[in-house]
Image (cartoon, rainbow, N blue to C red):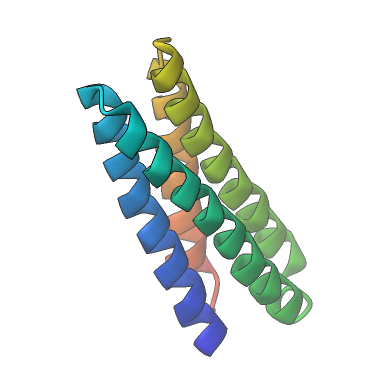
Amino acid sequence: MYTTHAHVTTWVIAIILFVIAFALYKSGNTKGSKIVHMILRLFYILVIITGGILFFKFQSTFGPALYGMKLLGGLLVIGMMEMILTRIKKGKGTGLFWLLFIIFFVAVLYLGFVKLPM
């Protein structure tokens, strides 16, 4: 139970930091955006650790395939967040990555809140 709360808290903070880092990169604040981006990378690790704990705790009980899909989807969400911020920093286009981020994020939320019991 507590691990679920820790996991949800870490990914909510990660999404907030992602939005802040994106806004800072878009505004041209390179120093602030680098700091927030590095803190966000720490939260990626925390999200992965708490998600891994949940995966190993519940995947054998409630359907390993769905938990495996959620794990993969979560990693893809993190990957798309990192790709968006890196490409914004380099001044490259991010349209495809935003689309993939939204698709993966909605899929992970659906699996986490609707399909899976934990």
